[in-house]
Amino acid sequence: MKVLNFGSLNLDYVYAVDHMVTAGETLASRGMQTFCGGKGLNQSIALARAGVPVYHAGLIGEEGEILFETCRESGVNTAFIRRIPGKSGHTIIQVDRGGQNCILLYGGANRSMTREYVDEVLENFGKGDMVLLQNEINLLDYIINRAYERGMEIVLNPSPYDHHLDSCDFSRVSWFLLNEIEGWQVTGEKEPDHILAKLRELYPKARVVLTLGSEGSVYQYKEERYRQGIFKVEVRDTTAAGDTFTGYFIASILEGMSVPDGLRLAARASAIAVSRDGATSSIPMREEVRL
Ligand code: RIB
Image (cartoon, rainbow, N blue to C red; front, top):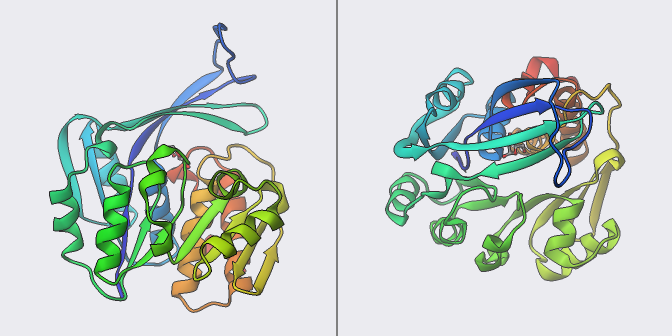
């Protein structure tokens, strides 16, 4: 069984601020660093560092070579990453003194996928293989349909949630990994229990992991539910914490761990990620993550 992640690769320009800049305000930052990130790249690296062989498919533009190298150095298979003219995806991220962030995203190369490219990549995968997706690339609806027709298992992190997801056939998704806000955007419900109930009603065959910030996470499949709290650490930067959780949780499932152990492993990995700066730079190696 092969694992493919069709996802974004971004350069993250990260500014340390005393508070998030507000409309009309000019704010001096306390410092600036550039990191490799993108929900796709972060999740591929989390999978690889957790010990899962993963193929990443995605597009990079100018200045994107470091994204490719970061993938390669982390053990992600880069055979399907393509270079195109124009800008790579990037973000401008403000991180405040409490480690919370605000992200402005420019899609760049991530939004230049073509059907031909998608078909060329998917030709290499088939029944029983897994495809992991987030919402920072274009043609998500097309990828879901083609992957489903090939018999692949579809894992969706519908993040960031926006109108591009409206055309996606969620009934083809086997796993949803999402946070409370995305849960609300998908279901229209605000309370975690209501979000889970609505997801079960809408997509009865899907397994769901709902992350709840400081309240931890909940897994749901049919009547079955498991909860996991967070591990408290000093927060430096929350960027990529969710991606680390996603990568480590999927790795636990592929390894055959029980769901409660998988949730605990993912919670430990994301606690390490929030205690460090940056996106890919914050994702721990498997040896650092104790159950
Ligand atoms: O989830 C964190 C990621 O979201 C960052 O690395 C940034 O690139 C944005 O895509």
